[in-house]
Image (cartoon, rainbow, N blue to C red):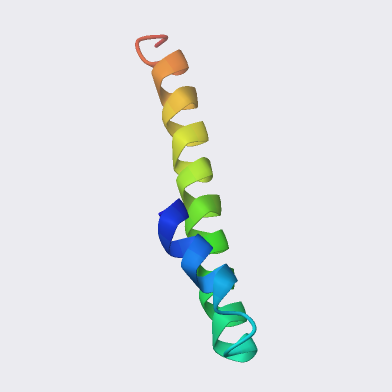
Length: 50
C-alpha cells in the first residue's frame, strides 16, 4: 500500500484535491489496520484467561 500512497503523494501537484482525498483514505486504512492489530493482540493476550 505504501507504493500506492507514494504515487498519490507524487500526484499532489497535478491534482491536489483528489490527491489529498486519496491520501486521507489511505491514512484511514492504515489506522484501521493498526486498530485491528491492537485488538488482535489484546484478544490473544486474554485468550484462555477465563
